[in-house]
Image (tube, rainbow, N blue to C red; front, side, top):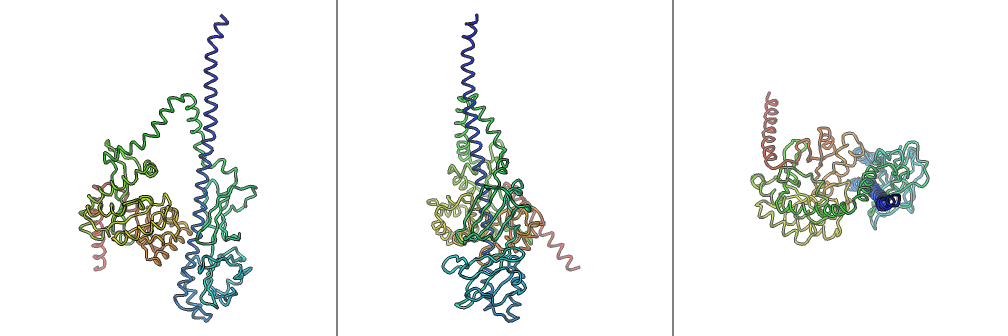
Length: 536
């Protein structure tokens, strides 16, 4: 009886041991996979934060250079009271510029728009210690002051004198850390030789050895941005996915064979679903109006992709766009919704030659073989003018070949199409890339619009972008406008056009067409009331 019992127990114990080993292997693998994925995600997010800090610094330098160019265009600056008064007016109109100074070729100060600011300087850098940007570009240097640090931007006037803009680099400009890391990390921007020009850090400072650093270096200026975080803070930040992964790993250990086949099907399933959706023409255009911020007049719309299934359910774009891009299906989806949008919007675009329709194009699609010819054919068959089509180049991926992209953009513009750069300020592009591409329009990202009514640095950056766009002969559109306060703040910064839920969410065509009619009636009624009040 005992031997029989032992024989019965051995297979059970063997199976139990195999399950235990399987659980241990999968649990160990799950731990490493979850930890690795979390670490990679943290690295990507913090590297992007470093890039945002760097781009903000580049925008500040661009603004300083543009200010110096304005001063030079108005005539040579000298030290008489009339000239200094004119320069002071320009400084007053630019919140980021603290002072403009006339200096000798060696860097010695001759005079200053606000001479009292000279008293705050602890030390003035010699020309030999300034950092050059390119062969004839501006020179950057740190200005140590009693109440902090400023950034100097120098441009030569002639062989004798130069102009310097003193930029106030506020710590709030680099207040970009997530709430969980604010007390455990810092953001620094330095010049190439290690001189700090801006820093956001906890008020109590960071007394932690071996901080983890994430850096970004400018290709345009001698600037270097670094985000440093305490290691223990990273141990608890964005780790919500750890235990779900471990549970999945345990499940895989228990039912390995079944879940393996299911996993293979899951890997293939979403892409196959997209292919079936394309075959059934389930990808539909939704339309969100673009409007004049001042008058409320509808000036056009952006076409957005929605996946509308046969049962009427809708898959949000974030649930299929990334997979469509990575699997190469986004091009087919784009052509499908463009064709449908042209078909339904043709009557309105034919009646109103100023009505513009924009559509998102990925960088890879833009430079693909035959893109321009296919686009011209689609628009020609749609019966609308090329000048009414705006291509919004998205920035979820960078341009692999910027020169080729610039050539294609130039060709598109020659045919009459307009090109906009989406997500300006937070995507892959710098301002030099936007200029090189030769786009017509900058779209200010919702990242800045969300806080523009309360956040001084956000308003300063938007104002800088508007001024730079004007100098580059570009228009500006703000996206994601949700409140009246945001619209007023954008108008104060010089933005004239926008889109967002303040006026309308993205709508299917029938509702969008009805909205346009009702909105036009509303504007006419408001105009009648205004005219009547004037007469009275």
